[in-house]
Length: 455
Image 1 (cartoon, rainbow, N blue to C red):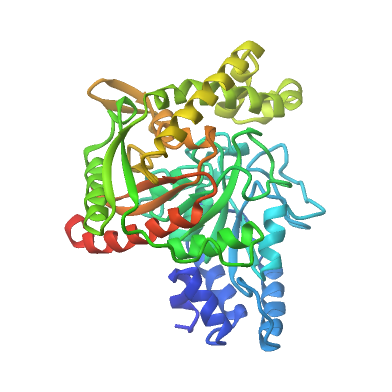
Image 2 (image 1 turned 45 degrees about the vertical axis):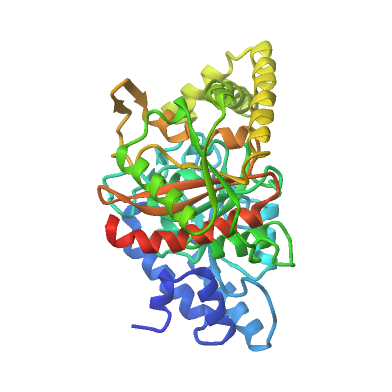
């Protein structure tokens, strides 16, 4: 075994440190990741893996390291969701329509990764045009959960989550319009961060919903997510990675009808997280925000209208170039009237104001990321005592409120239910990612303490 092999499953922070100390070369590391990618091809994590290009970038990084150059990600292999433009490298948006598109410039987020010295290892699979949460892509393959290939990894950033969890890259870039970073992070068992709306520039990323889209990192640890956030936002002060005191902070455990239907194993893990935070000196209380119940309809109208506006020309001129599920969503979205959209935005403002008032009483909200663990591929409904719910609707139910409001939200793996990962979600105040990440680190420690009891 080469010295690089153990690092393929190591945190990004450790990988970057090993590269700086010259304990491993970027070339060895890239080769080790590429072997892992080949071995796990059946998971369909990637759409494009430019092996020779990645090796050239690795050799260049090796020369820079030998000269003592600095860079937060110098020589670190990163996977990029195939929604973000990459100069000279095919960028499909997971679609048939753009299958041969080769951009002439990088998306802003990719440019930030390159400026920090990252090696773009490959472009990850996603739900077509990011418009779905199962990652069952009709053109590039059905992505599979690394914990159980019979199950979905979630989406739309499913390939990026697989890359992190299966040890195919040191970290990954994703996007999140209704939960597309946090859902696969929850189902696959990694950290996923949707920062405050606008914190990471979206120039060069194919849009889904202009007012809902966010870019963000998927990573193995909260520290890794902090490093990636600093790079992606262009900060060089380590603001997101800095340590913040957590003792005495106020945690609001979200309750209400929106949380009525949650699998018992998921509820148990959220309750365990709340108890653990209380033991660590945080003040934990229950919080109810009645207006959050309006999220489902508000998000649906907003996204349907914006996505259909983006795809209006193509869906009219070449509808069969879309997969069946995305085609239907776009066609239905075209029926959303202007008055409906305006009313949804009025409701959105009321939801935002109500959550803002809740933050007068608490510093963070705590709730499940997804109410279910990873569903079987092709499963369409979830059965509750109260009736059935579409799988897609269940997966976005607890993440979408924070796209509507633009609040930063972090999904952290916290134990398991029936052998599958459970994600617990922390939501912070606008532009307060540092405090959110600080509590996230505490959650990681608690998850390790709880591990024997939930294995």
